[in-house]
Image 1: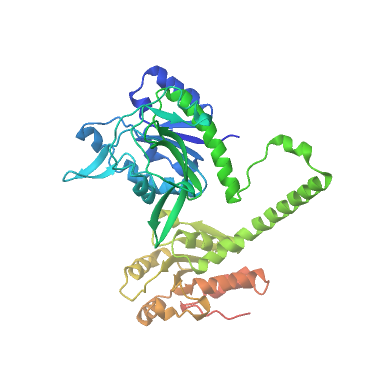
Image 2: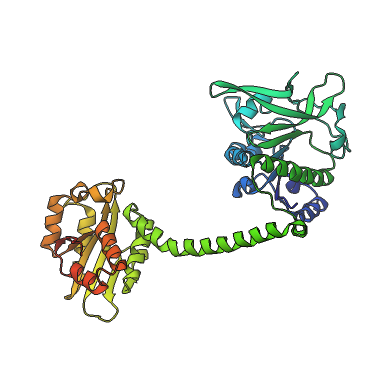
Length: 437
């Protein structure tokens, strides 16, 4: 099973050329290796498994300053990954305060973990003491072959319910299972474990001495854990190719029928897209409005000179394909407020009058009150009476987007023609009056 794995560590930054070459080899196995600085440019939630080495290449205040907010900024991404059933391995080195105010640590090299998990495990502020004597779970023994030193212990509860962590959140107590992987020889403190969290797993482990072999081991274990998690979530796991050899004839028939129906559904959805796009004109005010209105003009089979990207008062110059004399010079706007006679938008519009020409009609295409059902919108809610009078006085057609949409519906229903629509807009001074055909 191929599982995308992210390894975040400063190992490549401080390591030898041999280490860098080893990391490049790991890249061929589906593992992306980045430093903590470069990790800010990617999304950990794009991966199924993340291995995070908390030992960073900074010690002095000047060096640490470059790491400020690296760890906190990753917290939401790690939470998304866990919510989706992902696996996060924490290679738990000493706690390093990264950002501090008046001597109080505000961020550490563990603050990429969800806040409640940080609180119950105490990884962000617990004392970092070095130790080396601990017992290992046999299934994880390959990871501990080099007997790495540990710096952190994880406080857990143990009773008849098993081993778990408990915390209080959102008005209730929450229990999460813990699977110990390594415990100290005398005191049985947990120094390595797997913690169930949300729908995923967080593994807290001593940082290995032999990093390359440990990474390969964690990549395989992470794939196994991720598969278990998504199966528990009810997410379909991609079956191996050979499973086709073991399917019954009815199974194969139903799969073929499913494939055919999915193809038909894809075709229907493709045909549906233009209608969905145009309908967005009723509630859009920005770029989405431009795209939807442009689609309407093209459906009318008009010649459209799109000027929306040129930052001019005019957005479109429209002509009928079989006629070049008459034109509609359109200025489009969407607003959540209102426009009065002194509005800068109207002043800009009036300034474009010389560009219209003798046979042109300047059209103010406006979409307002977009949060309200178009059937009960009032133009007066976003365009004052004084503004309407000023526009009409200058022979400008004021066309609301809802009326343009209804003209489009009439055209699709073959109740009118694009020539009739063009003429009705071209001859209008002032507010366009939509009349059902």
